[in-house]
Length: 198
Image 1 (cartoon, rainbow, N blue to C red):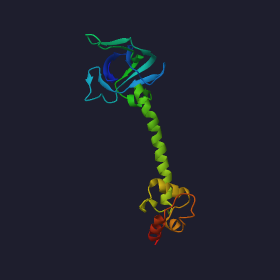
Image 2: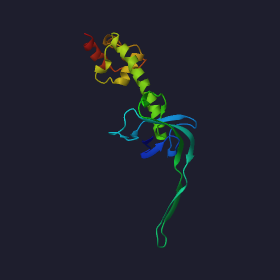
Image 3: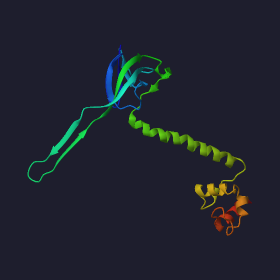
Image 4: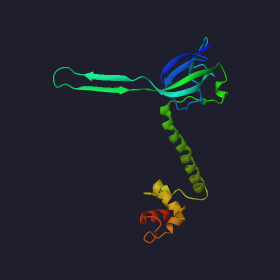
């Protein structure tokens, strides 16, 4: 049985036992990875992809391709010339299994390009931001007023006021703007808070 998989912007026709060089993947030698972008399995051609199909492979090594020389020379006197070399980073794989169905339930790590690893810290930061919003939400729900409705009080200033213990319009109205040291409070804020507290 064979399959056509897509990775690194290229398509590969593979069978079980094949050794394959693909664009660098975020996996170490000895790890097992699974390709989920399957275009064809045996004689089944996918609409864009074959649903539930997968190709599992074992990472043999992280290697570099042969050196390519890029040389540019412009003719005539005093012209410029430039020479640079490049070795593409590749991953060497051995295809172990071709699954026609049930690949999504196999539990094997999905093959992800090495460039996608940089997105992982951003994805990890997203739950922290959601947790911070979740912590702020109970404070707002527990009898606190929305201090950002006061003209000139933005989210940062509201956060500083909450940290200083001011969560309601009445508390802000009772503050003396000249002597309050925890954060800078403008007299206009106090006046607006008095009107809103009524």
